Length: 629
Image (cartoon, rainbow, N blue to C red; front, side):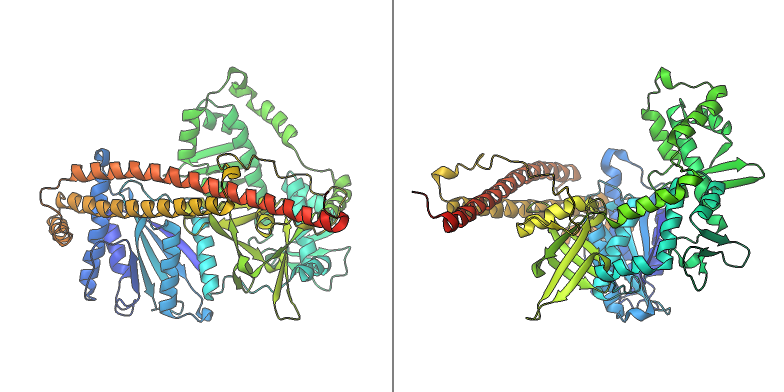
């Protein structure tokens, strides 16, 4: 299993210590397992001290130029100077150290989009081989800092899992359940049924006491008396109890879990209510106390302490919500933008009563008497849920791995991505001709993770509905529903004017196609040329900034690299920045022209599809009724 951890590197000195640590020759097979990206210059020999100086200098000239913009002071030690990510592999992965280093490099390159310098050092001194990935906090153009947040961590993990899985690493235990197997498993598995009941109760219970009372109504018996919490469903023929840690891989459904879960729900409702009725953060804190909620500031995060009776539960803002980070920056940003209307102003002595009304309005719990019938109704709806069956061609498949498929998708001509489909959502059949047939069963209301290999910032979740449209568009046919219902596809493709700007009446289709292809090729060539010029000038600007450094060693190395690039001694930093700005303006216009041509090409493709469809309809009609006279 590939495990990832992240550490923020504060200060130049700590960054240097980190570089020294990850390059340790005893851990990296005498620096043979070290790779990098975006570095200026090169080393002809593998000497540890020279490697440390080389990487340190590359990162520091990055900093020097960043500091030149708007006189920013990046040197403060409390600022983040790099991001240190540890990527650990299992001894059972059967991957060589060189393969693992390459995986780390590919993950870092895709994750950063090739916009940041990074080092990948593979350590082999322990039973489990692991990569140390050090990403500089400043981008190669010295304009932006690398932001690390929950989305970044999720993106890194998703990219790491995909590339590692394709290379042969174990991410999870292989799940060979097909769609049919998965349906049978859901019907017969006690564990699956128990998990569905628990999750239903969590959604429809307002407190822990309410949950336990409703659990009895769903025939769930919970035993907290032993070392492990155990469960039994009294309405099913179960040979043995199910332990709490075997129900869900992510959570252990014991007493502590329920206390924390319902405390989080209580705190989130209080926070949501108070945000609408507080004028600033101090007002928020005072009113929170009226709802038995203490708000304690920490360095950056916030502790929310909910008291009730003899117990007090503390939840840190990092663990409170998946939707929002309720930390200090969140509240600073919120109250700097919010304009509380007079209707929402709430005197402090009315907070408790008003919150009780809010609680009643937001209550989604179900009475114990209705729990069983409501669960059975929801279960029937789940079983009858519409799934779309989509058949894939082999060219649409990027890679088949142990637990599923990575499939190719296109959102526009120039936006290619990958989506992972688990085995439980597909069937793979082998035809008599020994060809594989892939059928997907997709839920239009679920979300699937889309990887953009060229730009990780564009990674996102897409709805099944969008994915189904996209996949069916590639095959030029509408997928059919797995489960037939009275309501078939209600949405139709909007009719668009396909002839706008093309004037197809005056020229042949081939002439238009050739013209568009030539325009796209010329646009791509121009953008590549401009990007290369900007990249070179950015390197020169970095070196010129390094020449003005207070550190004599940075000055020396920067001047030496400028000589290698044959840069005029009369060229100034300001002149280079002006050239970069001019080229960036030119690139911005070139990108706009390119996107315009892409839109024309997409319109042209739609036109051909329509033409082909109408031609096919005419041919069928002529076969059935004869040609029109």
